[in-house]
Image (cartoon, rainbow, N blue to C red; front, side):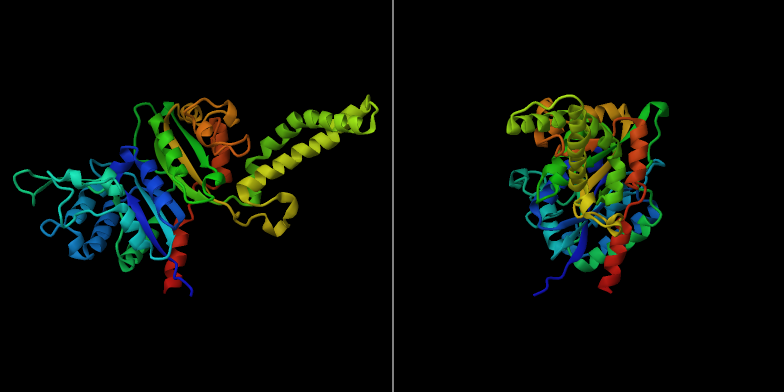
Amino acid sequence: MIVEQTLSYVLTTPYTILKSRTGGVISRLLSRVDLELVGAQMICPDEKFVQSYAQIVRSEDPKYLNADSNLLTKYIEHNLGPSGGRKHRSLLLVFRGSDPCTKLSNICGVIFSGDKSMEAGNVENLHGETIRDTYADLISSPDDPNKVIYFEPAVLTPKKQELADKSLKLFAGFLETAQNIVSNRTYPDPSKIERTLVIIKPDNWKYASSRPGTIIDMFSKTGLRIVGIKVHRFSLRQALEFYKPVEENLIKKLGPIFGQKAQELLENEFHFPVRGCAEKTFAECFGAQYGRDQFQKIIEFMSGLRPDQCTPEDMDKPGSVMCMILVYEGEDAIRKIRDVLGPTDPLKAPGGTVRREFGSSVMVNTAHASDSTESYEREKEIVMFNSNPLGRIINNYLESAG
Protein backbone atom coordinates (compact mmCIF):
# COMPACT_ATOMS: atom_id res chain seq x y z
CA MET A 1 0.00 0.00 0.00
CA ILE A 2 1.34 3.43 -0.97
CA VAL A 3 0.99 5.94 1.87
CA GLU A 4 0.18 9.47 0.70
CA GLN A 5 2.92 11.98 1.47
CA THR A 6 1.65 15.50 2.11
CA LEU A 7 3.08 18.72 3.48
CA SER A 8 2.18 20.71 6.56
CA TYR A 9 3.95 23.38 8.57
CA VAL A 10 4.71 24.90 11.93
CA LEU A 11 5.02 28.67 12.18
CA THR A 12 7.00 29.80 15.21
CA THR A 13 5.67 33.11 16.52
CA PRO A 14 7.73 36.31 16.83
CA TYR A 15 7.59 36.17 20.64
CA THR A 16 8.95 32.62 20.70
CA ILE A 17 11.85 33.68 18.48
CA LEU A 18 12.47 36.84 20.50
CA LYS A 19 12.74 34.75 23.67
CA SER A 20 15.32 32.43 22.00
CA ARG A 21 13.02 29.41 22.22
CA THR A 22 13.60 28.45 18.58
CA GLY A 23 15.99 25.63 19.43
CA GLY A 24 13.59 24.12 21.96
CA VAL A 25 10.72 24.12 19.47
CA ILE A 26 12.88 22.53 16.77
CA SER A 27 14.14 19.89 19.22
CA ARG A 28 10.60 18.79 20.05
CA LEU A 29 9.54 18.66 16.41
CA LEU A 30 12.57 16.76 15.10
CA SER A 31 12.73 14.19 17.89
CA ARG A 32 9.06 13.37 18.30
CA VAL A 33 7.47 13.17 14.85
CA ASP A 34 8.27 10.72 12.05
CA LEU A 35 8.20 13.44 9.41
CA GLU A 36 10.88 14.85 7.12
CA LEU A 37 11.87 18.47 7.53
CA VAL A 38 11.99 19.64 3.90
CA GLY A 39 12.45 23.36 4.36
CA ALA A 40 12.86 26.27 6.73
CA GLN A 41 12.80 30.03 6.25
CA MET A 42 12.76 33.10 8.45
CA ILE A 43 10.04 35.47 7.29
CA CYS A 44 8.76 38.95 8.22
CA PRO A 45 5.04 38.97 7.34
CA ASP A 46 3.48 42.21 6.11
CA GLU A 47 -0.05 43.35 6.92
CA LYS A 48 -1.54 42.00 3.68
CA PHE A 49 -0.15 38.52 4.36
CA VAL A 50 -1.34 38.60 7.97
CA GLN A 51 -4.92 39.44 7.05
CA SER A 52 -5.04 36.69 4.42
CA TYR A 53 -3.54 34.17 6.84
CA ALA A 54 -5.98 35.14 9.59
CA GLN A 55 -8.88 34.59 7.19
CA ILE A 56 -7.66 31.06 6.42
CA VAL A 57 -7.28 30.24 10.11
CA ARG A 58 -10.71 31.74 10.81
CA SER A 59 -12.24 29.11 8.55
CA GLU A 60 -11.02 26.32 10.85
CA ASP A 61 -13.49 24.42 13.00
CA PRO A 62 -14.72 26.84 15.73
CA LYS A 63 -14.25 24.22 18.43
CA TYR A 64 -10.49 24.81 18.16
CA LEU A 65 -10.91 28.54 18.79
CA ASN A 66 -12.27 30.70 21.59
CA ALA A 67 -15.97 30.99 20.75
CA ASP A 68 -16.31 34.49 22.13
CA SER A 69 -13.27 36.27 20.71
CA ASN A 70 -11.78 34.23 17.87
CA LEU A 71 -8.70 34.14 20.06
CA LEU A 72 -6.23 32.74 17.55
CA THR A 73 -7.15 34.98 14.64
CA LYS A 74 -7.03 38.06 16.84
CA TYR A 75 -3.56 37.00 17.97
CA ILE A 76 -2.44 36.65 14.35
CA GLU A 77 -3.85 40.03 13.38
CA HIS A 78 -2.27 41.85 16.31
CA ASN A 79 1.04 40.03 16.81
CA LEU A 80 2.24 38.40 13.60
CA GLY A 81 2.34 41.53 11.48
CA PRO A 82 4.26 44.80 11.78
CA SER A 83 3.95 47.02 14.84
CA GLY A 84 5.41 50.45 15.43
CA GLY A 85 6.56 50.52 11.83
CA ARG A 86 8.69 47.38 12.26
CA LYS A 87 8.16 43.88 10.91
CA HIS A 88 8.73 40.87 13.13
CA ARG A 89 10.51 37.56 12.50
CA SER A 90 8.58 34.29 12.29
CA LEU A 91 10.12 30.92 11.45
CA LEU A 92 8.36 28.72 8.91
CA LEU A 93 9.16 24.99 9.16
CA VAL A 94 7.68 22.67 6.51
CA PHE A 95 7.42 18.91 7.02
CA ARG A 96 6.52 16.03 4.69
CA GLY A 97 5.07 12.65 5.53
CA SER A 98 1.92 10.69 6.23
CA ASP A 99 -0.83 12.68 7.97
CA PRO A 100 1.50 15.55 8.98
CA CYS A 101 -1.32 17.80 10.21
CA THR A 102 -2.36 15.37 12.94
CA LYS A 103 1.20 14.58 13.96
CA LEU A 104 2.29 18.21 14.13
CA SER A 105 -0.89 19.26 15.92
CA ASN A 106 -0.35 16.59 18.55
CA ILE A 107 3.20 17.68 19.33
CA CYS A 108 2.34 21.39 19.20
CA GLY A 109 -0.56 20.87 21.59
CA VAL A 110 -3.94 22.48 22.12
CA ILE A 111 -4.66 26.20 22.23
CA PHE A 112 -7.94 26.07 24.09
CA SER A 113 -9.02 22.86 25.75
CA GLY A 114 -12.46 21.90 26.92
CA ASP A 115 -11.26 21.41 30.49
CA LYS A 116 -9.66 24.90 30.43
CA SER A 117 -6.44 23.35 31.70
CA MET A 118 -4.40 26.35 30.58
CA GLU A 119 -6.52 28.86 32.44
CA ALA A 120 -5.85 30.41 35.80
CA GLY A 121 -6.10 28.00 38.69
CA ASN A 122 -5.57 24.92 36.54
CA VAL A 123 -1.85 25.14 35.72
CA GLU A 124 -1.19 21.91 37.61
CA ASN A 125 -2.95 20.09 34.79
CA LEU A 126 -0.10 20.97 32.41
CA HIS A 127 2.55 18.29 31.92
CA GLY A 128 5.09 19.87 29.58
CA GLU A 129 4.52 17.16 26.98
CA THR A 130 3.73 19.47 24.07
CA ILE A 131 5.35 22.61 22.73
CA ARG A 132 2.45 24.72 23.96
CA ASP A 133 2.55 23.06 27.39
CA THR A 134 6.08 24.39 27.68
CA TYR A 135 6.09 27.69 25.82
CA ALA A 136 2.49 28.90 25.38
CA ASP A 137 0.35 30.94 27.78
CA LEU A 138 -3.41 31.31 28.11
CA ILE A 139 -4.27 33.23 31.26
CA SER A 140 -7.82 34.01 32.26
CA SER A 141 -9.15 36.49 34.76
CA PRO A 142 -9.52 34.98 38.26
CA ASP A 143 -12.96 36.58 38.44
CA ASP A 144 -14.14 35.52 35.00
CA PRO A 145 -12.63 32.30 33.58
CA ASN A 146 -14.08 33.12 30.16
CA LYS A 147 -12.16 36.41 29.97
CA VAL A 148 -8.65 35.91 28.59
CA ILE A 149 -6.19 38.53 29.78
CA TYR A 150 -3.04 37.13 28.12
CA PHE A 151 -2.52 34.73 25.23
CA GLU A 152 0.65 33.50 23.49
CA PRO A 153 0.33 30.30 21.37
CA ALA A 154 4.10 29.86 20.74
CA VAL A 155 3.51 28.08 17.42
CA LEU A 156 0.82 27.92 14.75
CA THR A 157 -0.06 24.78 12.81
CA PRO A 158 -3.21 23.61 10.98
CA LYS A 159 -5.28 20.65 12.10
CA LYS A 160 -6.66 19.83 8.64
CA GLN A 161 -4.88 19.16 5.35
CA GLU A 162 -7.27 21.44 3.48
CA LEU A 163 -6.26 24.37 5.66
CA ALA A 164 -2.60 23.39 5.44
CA ASP A 165 -2.74 23.49 1.64
CA LYS A 166 -4.50 26.87 1.64
CA SER A 167 -1.90 28.30 3.99
CA LEU A 168 0.99 26.78 2.04
CA LYS A 169 -0.30 28.40 -1.14
CA LEU A 170 -0.31 31.74 0.68
CA PHE A 171 3.22 31.12 2.00
CA ALA A 172 4.50 30.16 -1.46
CA GLY A 173 3.21 33.41 -2.93
CA PHE A 174 4.79 35.42 -0.13
CA LEU A 175 8.13 33.61 -0.47
CA GLU A 176 8.42 34.52 -4.16
CA THR A 177 9.59 38.01 -3.21
CA ALA A 178 10.81 37.41 0.36
CA GLN A 179 14.51 37.77 1.15
CA ASN A 180 16.17 34.78 2.84
CA ILE A 181 18.13 37.12 5.12
CA VAL A 182 15.67 39.39 6.87
CA SER A 183 16.48 42.99 7.81
CA ASN A 184 13.91 44.21 10.31
CA ARG A 185 16.04 46.05 12.83
CA THR A 186 18.16 49.20 12.86
CA TYR A 187 21.21 49.50 15.11
CA PRO A 188 22.64 52.63 16.82
CA ASP A 189 26.05 51.85 15.31
CA PRO A 190 25.72 49.56 12.26
CA SER A 191 29.52 49.45 11.87
CA LYS A 192 29.69 47.18 14.95
CA ILE A 193 27.25 44.64 13.52
CA GLU A 194 28.53 41.42 11.96
CA ARG A 195 26.89 38.46 10.32
CA THR A 196 28.23 34.94 10.42
CA LEU A 197 27.23 31.66 8.81
CA VAL A 198 26.68 28.45 10.77
CA ILE A 199 26.23 24.96 9.31
CA ILE A 200 24.67 22.22 11.41
CA LYS A 201 26.39 19.33 9.63
CA PRO A 202 24.97 16.06 8.24
CA ASP A 203 25.97 13.93 11.26
CA ASN A 204 23.14 15.63 13.18
CA TRP A 205 20.48 14.51 10.70
CA LYS A 206 21.07 10.76 10.38
CA TYR A 207 18.06 9.92 12.55
CA ALA A 208 15.30 11.68 14.47
CA SER A 209 17.10 13.65 17.14
CA SER A 210 16.90 16.78 19.27
CA ARG A 211 20.54 17.57 18.47
CA PRO A 212 19.98 20.28 15.80
CA GLY A 213 17.61 22.15 18.08
CA THR A 214 19.91 21.73 21.08
CA ILE A 215 22.81 23.16 19.07
CA ILE A 216 20.68 26.18 18.12
CA ASP A 217 19.73 26.52 21.77
CA MET A 218 23.42 26.53 22.76
CA PHE A 219 24.17 29.28 20.23
CA SER A 220 21.28 31.33 21.64
CA LYS A 221 23.33 32.21 24.72
CA THR A 222 25.36 34.55 22.51
CA GLY A 223 22.38 36.92 22.40
CA LEU A 224 22.67 37.06 18.60
CA ARG A 225 19.66 37.10 16.28
CA ILE A 226 18.92 34.44 13.65
CA VAL A 227 18.18 36.43 10.49
CA GLY A 228 18.28 33.60 7.95
CA ILE A 229 17.85 29.84 7.79
CA LYS A 230 17.59 27.16 5.13
CA VAL A 231 17.69 23.38 4.74
CA HIS A 232 20.48 22.57 2.30
CA ARG A 233 22.03 19.64 0.46
CA PHE A 234 25.55 20.38 -0.75
CA SER A 235 26.21 19.53 -4.37
CA LEU A 236 29.62 18.04 -5.10
CA ARG A 237 30.72 21.27 -6.77
CA GLN A 238 29.64 23.37 -3.79
CA ALA A 239 31.39 21.11 -1.28
CA LEU A 240 34.62 21.14 -3.30
CA GLU A 241 34.59 24.91 -3.55
CA PHE A 242 33.57 25.41 0.08
CA TYR A 243 36.40 23.23 1.43
CA LYS A 244 39.00 24.05 -1.24
CA PRO A 245 41.25 25.93 1.26
CA VAL A 246 41.27 22.81 3.46
CA GLU A 247 42.77 20.52 0.79
CA GLU A 248 46.13 22.31 0.61
CA ASN A 249 46.37 22.49 4.40
CA LEU A 250 45.67 18.76 4.74
CA ILE A 251 48.37 17.86 2.22
CA LYS A 252 50.85 20.23 3.85
CA LYS A 253 50.07 18.99 7.37
CA LEU A 254 49.51 15.27 6.80
CA GLY A 255 52.02 14.69 3.96
CA PRO A 256 55.20 14.61 6.07
CA ILE A 257 53.53 12.76 8.97
CA PHE A 258 52.10 9.89 6.94
CA GLY A 259 55.01 9.86 4.53
CA GLN A 260 57.24 9.14 7.52
CA LYS A 261 54.86 6.45 8.79
CA ALA A 262 54.93 4.75 5.38
CA GLN A 263 58.71 4.91 5.36
CA GLU A 264 58.94 3.34 8.82
CA LEU A 265 56.60 0.52 7.84
CA LEU A 266 58.71 -0.32 4.79
CA GLU A 267 61.93 -0.22 6.79
CA ASN A 268 60.44 -2.59 9.38
CA GLU A 269 59.13 -4.91 6.68
CA PHE A 270 62.32 -5.15 4.61
CA HIS A 271 64.85 -4.51 7.40
CA PHE A 272 66.92 -1.81 5.77
CA PRO A 273 66.92 1.98 6.15
CA VAL A 274 65.40 4.24 3.51
CA ARG A 275 67.21 7.57 3.55
CA GLY A 276 68.05 10.61 1.46
CA CYS A 277 65.69 11.66 -1.31
CA ALA A 278 63.34 8.79 -0.49
CA GLU A 279 62.10 10.63 2.59
CA LYS A 280 60.95 13.57 0.46
CA THR A 281 59.43 11.19 -2.08
CA PHE A 282 57.36 9.44 0.59
CA ALA A 283 56.02 12.80 1.82
CA GLU A 284 55.23 14.06 -1.67
CA CYS A 285 53.72 10.81 -2.93
CA PHE A 286 52.19 8.64 -0.22
CA GLY A 287 51.75 11.39 2.38
CA ALA A 288 50.22 13.83 -0.09
CA GLN A 289 47.93 11.11 -1.43
CA TYR A 290 46.77 10.36 2.09
CA GLY A 291 45.97 14.05 2.60
CA ARG A 292 43.96 14.11 -0.63
CA ASP A 293 42.07 11.00 0.49
CA GLN A 294 41.13 12.72 3.75
CA PHE A 295 39.91 15.69 1.75
CA GLN A 296 37.77 13.34 -0.37
CA LYS A 297 36.26 11.95 2.83
CA ILE A 298 35.35 15.46 4.02
CA ILE A 299 33.58 16.12 0.72
CA GLU A 300 31.77 12.80 0.97
CA PHE A 301 30.76 13.58 4.56
CA MET A 302 29.29 16.96 3.57
CA SER A 303 27.64 15.97 0.27
CA GLY A 304 27.21 12.20 0.44
CA LEU A 305 29.28 11.94 -2.75
CA ARG A 306 32.96 11.06 -3.15
CA PRO A 307 34.59 13.10 -5.95
CA ASP A 308 36.75 10.30 -7.35
CA GLN A 309 33.70 8.05 -7.71
CA CYS A 310 31.43 10.54 -9.49
CA THR A 311 30.93 11.60 -13.09
CA PRO A 312 30.83 15.23 -14.32
CA GLU A 313 27.04 14.89 -14.54
CA ASP A 314 26.93 14.44 -10.76
CA MET A 315 28.69 17.71 -9.95
CA ASP A 316 25.64 19.94 -9.56
CA LYS A 317 23.11 17.45 -8.22
CA PRO A 318 21.95 18.03 -4.63
CA GLY A 319 23.78 15.65 -2.31
CA SER A 320 22.23 12.72 -0.52
CA VAL A 321 22.75 14.17 2.98
CA MET A 322 21.23 17.30 4.47
CA CYS A 323 22.34 20.07 6.75
CA MET A 324 20.87 23.28 8.11
CA ILE A 325 22.47 26.66 7.45
CA LEU A 326 21.81 29.70 9.61
CA VAL A 327 22.95 33.31 9.55
CA TYR A 328 23.40 35.06 12.89
CA GLU A 329 23.58 38.84 13.31
CA GLY A 330 24.84 41.12 16.07
CA GLU A 331 27.87 42.75 17.63
CA ASP A 332 31.03 40.63 17.47
CA ALA A 333 28.97 37.80 15.98
CA ILE A 334 31.88 35.85 14.47
CA ARG A 335 33.86 35.55 17.72
CA LYS A 336 30.79 34.87 19.87
CA ILE A 337 29.60 31.99 17.70
CA ARG A 338 33.05 30.44 17.42
CA ASP A 339 33.52 30.63 21.20
CA VAL A 340 30.35 28.59 21.69
CA LEU A 341 31.28 26.25 18.82
CA GLY A 342 34.72 25.35 20.14
CA PRO A 343 37.95 24.38 18.30
CA THR A 344 38.05 22.03 15.30
CA ASP A 345 39.14 19.00 17.36
CA PRO A 346 36.27 18.08 19.73
CA LEU A 347 38.74 16.38 22.08
CA LYS A 348 40.47 19.73 22.62
CA ALA A 349 37.24 21.71 22.95
CA PRO A 350 36.28 23.12 26.37
CA GLY A 351 33.28 21.71 28.19
CA GLY A 352 29.99 23.36 27.32
CA THR A 353 30.92 24.00 23.69
CA VAL A 354 28.96 22.53 20.78
CA ARG A 355 31.85 20.45 19.46
CA ARG A 356 32.72 19.07 22.88
CA GLU A 357 29.12 18.02 23.44
CA PHE A 358 28.39 16.53 20.02
CA GLY A 359 31.58 16.23 17.92
CA SER A 360 33.46 12.95 17.58
CA SER A 361 36.49 13.77 15.41
CA VAL A 362 38.19 16.58 13.51
CA MET A 363 36.05 15.74 10.47
CA VAL A 364 32.81 14.76 12.21
CA ASN A 365 32.73 17.83 14.44
CA THR A 366 28.99 18.59 14.23
CA ALA A 367 29.01 22.23 13.06
CA HIS A 368 30.88 24.90 11.11
CA ALA A 369 31.08 28.66 11.63
CA SER A 370 32.71 31.36 9.52
CA ASP A 371 36.06 32.51 10.89
CA SER A 372 36.03 36.02 9.37
CA THR A 373 33.84 38.49 7.54
CA GLU A 374 35.60 37.53 4.32
CA SER A 375 34.85 33.84 4.95
CA TYR A 376 31.21 34.64 5.67
CA GLU A 377 30.82 36.49 2.35
CA ARG A 378 32.58 33.71 0.44
CA GLU A 379 30.66 30.86 2.09
CA LYS A 380 27.30 32.61 1.76
CA GLU A 381 27.78 32.85 -2.00
CA ILE A 382 28.88 29.22 -2.39
CA VAL A 383 25.79 27.82 -0.64
CA MET A 384 23.59 30.39 -2.42
CA PHE A 385 22.16 31.46 0.91
CA ASN A 386 20.16 34.29 -0.60
CA SER A 387 18.17 31.66 -2.51
CA ASN A 388 15.90 29.44 -0.43
CA PRO A 389 14.22 26.50 -2.24
CA LEU A 390 11.27 26.35 0.18
CA GLY A 391 8.86 28.26 -2.07
CA ARG A 392 9.66 25.95 -4.97
CA ILE A 393 9.21 22.86 -2.79
CA ILE A 394 5.75 24.07 -1.72
CA ASN A 395 4.71 24.94 -5.28
CA ASN A 396 5.86 21.54 -6.59
CA TYR A 397 3.80 19.83 -3.91
CA LEU A 398 0.68 21.93 -4.61
CA GLU A 399 0.95 21.25 -8.34
CA SER A 400 1.27 17.50 -7.78
CA ALA A 401 -1.64 17.54 -5.34
CA GLY A 402 -3.72 19.08 -8.11
